[in-house]
Amino acid sequence: MKKLAVTSAVLAALMGAAPAIAGITLDVYGERVTGTEKNEGLFGESSAKQGVELAYGYENLTLSAEATTGKDLDLGASYKFELGENFYLKPSAGYVYKWNKKDADFNKGVVSQYGNKTNVAKFGVEAGAAFGDFFTSARYRIDTNLDKTGLSINNTKVGEARGSIGRTDLLVGYNLENVTLTAKGIHKSQLNKDLRQINDNELVKNKNSFWSSELKATFTGYEGVAPYIQYAHNHDNHDNAIKLGAKFSF
Image (cartoon, rainbow, N blue to C red; front, top):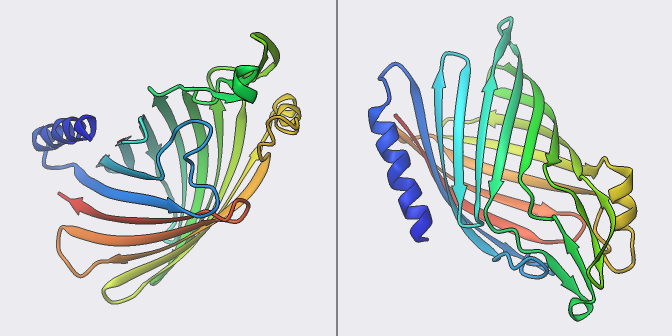
């Protein structure tokens, strides 16, 4: 929490120094995961986390930085190409820095899996459309680990491979008078065939492909702040996540 508070103060200072012609948003949220698998197992993650995201937009360019108590920093950039009145195309790039790189141990240290908390490079493209109060979008993104993942058996590395996730996001939304409702389906799959073989190992049993979904309601009746609630469900391990937050506009 102390690191998050310091990060929030720095982001707020940057926000105050930004030129007035830029659009700035600050998203502050808390999230908790419940279910059969709470992300508290192999790598020591907590089932609850808090985060803050600062986004800086100038014309069609958006830059963002997000820090969480999950011990990562997510930097992103995107550019929106308007294709007529109703359509757009938006390529994006990002970098995730993780400062908690604890690996997983199996069988009391005889077998371990390393490289799971590697930094990540992200490249994607999104296409979207809006017709009145209805809007929709589809995005495909490749998230590539910058370090290799593998198994270590009695301190001997086996089957090193660099993970690469293909992620597809499908979203639909509708603007009501004071509320915006959105629904999203997310599919992730491992693209590296060597890592798929590692995940299929009986000692690891990681998923190579899974679906999740999100439902979100954002209250838009206040000027300058939009509180929201989001529910997410992982269809493979049946975990649920509740996210409460507010986005401030300046």
